[in-house]
Image 1 (cartoon, rainbow, N blue to C red):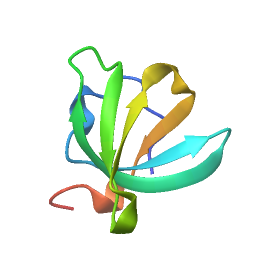
Image 2 (image 1 turned 120 degrees about the horizontal axis):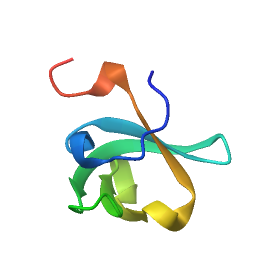
Image 3 (image 1 turned 135 degrees about the vertical axis):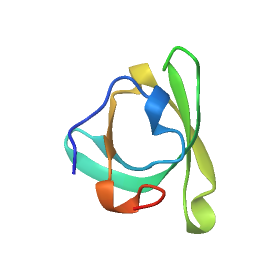
Image 4 (image 1 turned 30 degrees about the horizontal axis):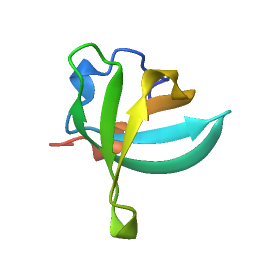
Length: 71
C-alpha cells in the first residue's frame, strides 16, 4: 500500500482507502476527479452509492495496489 496522496488526478479508476484521523472509513473506487484535485467522487460497493470528497474535508486518500485496474 502507498501513503496518502494529495494530487488525485492519477487516481481515476483506482481503488483507495478513505481515512479520517488515521482510521479507515471505507474503501471505494475513484469515479471522477476535478481538474484541480479539489474534489473527487468515490464509488462504493453495496448500498453506500457514491460520495463527493473535497480536499478540505480532512480525509486521507490512500491508493490500494492490489485493487487497481489490471492488478
